[in-house]
Length: 474
Image (cartoon, rainbow, N blue to C red; front, top):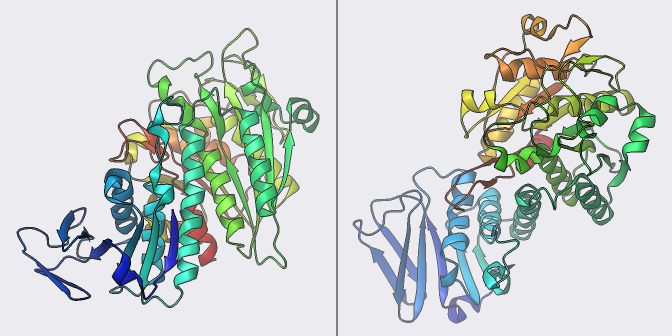
């Protein structure tokens, strides 16, 4: 799929024109000597509607955006075209944005068209995985002042999100800890990001005991991935940590339902990796350090046990109450390692951490935990701008006593049917050394789910674009 700026020949040679429309009582459109007026009974530009019309051998596709279109509305509207009506798209197509002047509108349209090319048929043996959209080219008729830049940005946003889709949607026997390490190395080489990977032996030497405990029952060895993007004269230093449980059986506290979807438990890792790719590809002016601890939580005779007391990189001891509260254990070592060795000004983790978050917010909103009011506002503002919403839950110290252990410094689960997401956040905070600008984002309900774009649950790339907007607002 290729994009270019408006050419004078476009109006005479193209046989397909896409026209986005804000909702109105009547829709009128002119193309060369052709004038079209759509009856309100046919099309008014209502959100999520499409109307196609053939006249004098040309196909006009009108895309409804509603009365007050936002970034996500526009992105999904164009994604719908390439996802559901790709048979209409071939050759050179004009994308007529002459009625819109905002750069972000073009970014949303371009990224949406590219996202719609994604298919889940990664392992089909027939030709269903092929995609003729690779041969389609779009010519943008635009009054936007920075058209080339907006197209480039939209493509890079989509490329990072598509990579994130793939990382989450591929099965766990493909996306192993080593696979994620290899992916990070390839991305780092392409975008000038330094990458270091600890294997299980190096992790033991470093003292990453909580991280190693979770992965020790799997024959797919763990990998502790560190990425560092350092531009010239960086303005700020931001640390990212992503939960990378490539498959979660629950361990000896085995899951009794929903295990088929647990390939998505590395959604936080995928978000962090995709966000690093996007930020580096756009050469943001901030230093970004990411830690992605990757393990498989399996079961064998070497599995860690409920009631075990394990160590951690921080030196603090942890009583294991539930082996299915494993993500917070690897994050504990990731957060501690980040704080001690890199000391970023802002520290954020993304994790598919608790079902409690889904019970609270469903699948449309992530849970945000932070004591830094300014960071909370910045994250919410960034999320609202791109349709990736989050809402804060309390981080009051009164919840910390729920994680008290009689035998160790802290326990990994309070074992009660309430405040699961909050107590998990308090556990993570325990390993941040009271970092003044720390935020935990629980994306259990937003990283993987149902939508109109597939018949089964699939990745959303939640957090990738949000993190870019945050960086731009700092």
